[in-house]
Length: 249
Image 1 (cartoon, helix red, strand yellow):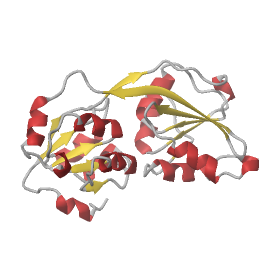
Image 2: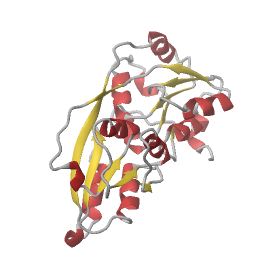
Image 3: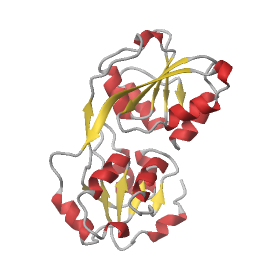
Image 4: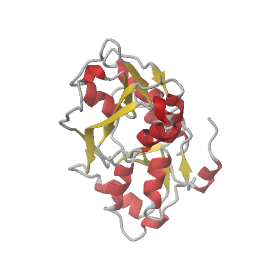
């Protein structure tokens, strides 16, 4: 994957990348790319994932499609339910597809991983008219996929679409203060962020220099969160995955 021109704005004299998302279980695609590029990771997770109790609007077996936009949604759902005999599974990208393997499942449809709006367009092309669809999301996830699916579907064949929030992200109980000191003293290459929650939590910890920070964003929704603070990311991943994020750091 070609590195975007915007990464020219990253300070090349620094080799430290601040990682603001938790180290993933299993294969660490982000760390693999960092090692290959001889960059050092300083861990500063800004989110903890907490499963939520949830109720469905109808029996889970009635849904024709289960749609996931994150690994956390997959974990929370399959910790409680199994896949119905007739159900199909859709995931936003390859990294989410890999998460299904831990539960002995595979995706019937895998998006390109670019963004929620692109995923909705890709998914719409394979959905039959009137399908019953359940979006399995985090509490803070925007309604991008839901709105796009409903807007672009002819009314006569519009899907029956429900949403359920199965997890939430919160500020970790323990913060790596050394990483925050590095950021405040400009002793880093770039800050890698993969969710709006991580952006918001980090910004509550930083000083008045915040608008001058260098962020690498996993995708458009995370970049939008940065812009609410007047910050333009120095790079945005083409592929919405940890590997894609690592490529632009």
